[in-house]
Image (cartoon, rainbow, N blue to C red; front, side):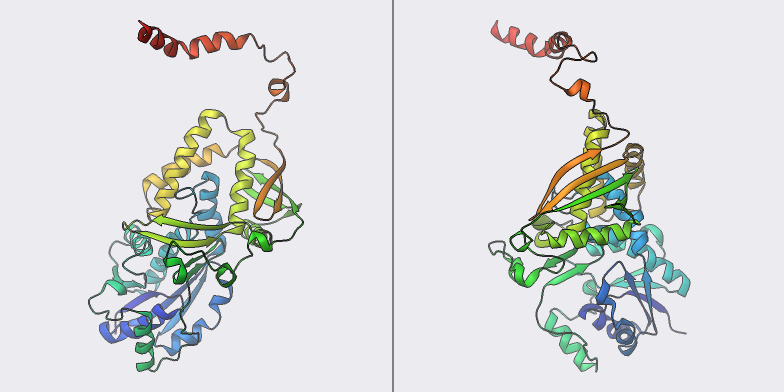
Length: 401
């Protein structure tokens, strides 16, 4: 019997060519695994495509709920953002994809897992660190880094497919390199490769419109959270995945969540891309709006550091590590009282507060009001300032001498 290899299969040009390449160069039985993270219509016709290209079978694994609840929500609760802009859409999904690839490889008795990530990107790191953490005994084949891989361009891959009798059921024209899931869609390539060029948004956007093309009237939205997790939109209870879908619809309509960023990849180079994360941008903002009422100053300060650390961990593919577990344990502790209602208005790319309430709010109107009340005596501040600024005053006295 032939050895089996599990191929992370998207149905795109790279992984379509890799099926024949694996059979030709390694004589493997190729088992394709497509992880459904919410790509929607991108999954149409995948089974026929994989089998016709030489795969023995195709698994399509729906992991949308697991992605939303176990990978996206920890990042939302932490307010994890990479380099202050990127909401980790691709990064969040990669460890889950690696996890499911390992599970199928074990089920099939496969000796290797293959992926089509390039040698220049972050995904090769994320896939392989995930596989190493969960199945260190399984061989990893990175097609683009293999000495046997001689296809160095999109056109060479197209030619290879034609030579092997593979009919490509999609356009072979140049287009953006995209990654899509329920959380976001990323765009790279074409004019985006030159940071001096403005994005061609009319050609580029998939999930929404620019703020200029958004409706002239804003739209009010009410959300509820329980222990940091969203539970409803406008009074309708929903699971997390459906809340993200509805927020994507609303955010896309109003031009929310379009980010143009030059980011620092793990491998050392800079790359430019445009990310659409309409629902995620709203969810992050709504969650933070609620947290402002509830978390004390010291916890907020530490949580900012932990959020940045989780963003780095996720971006670098180190999800299955003790550090990630420890950071998430801290974050979960901070969320015990993050329960309440958030109101906001969506208007031409903006998320505008309309009021926040929580049974666990630390905001006290009697204390915060300019009107003198029983809970706060203005005279108390004098002694506090004297002690708080004592070292500053002592230093100034010494310098004056």
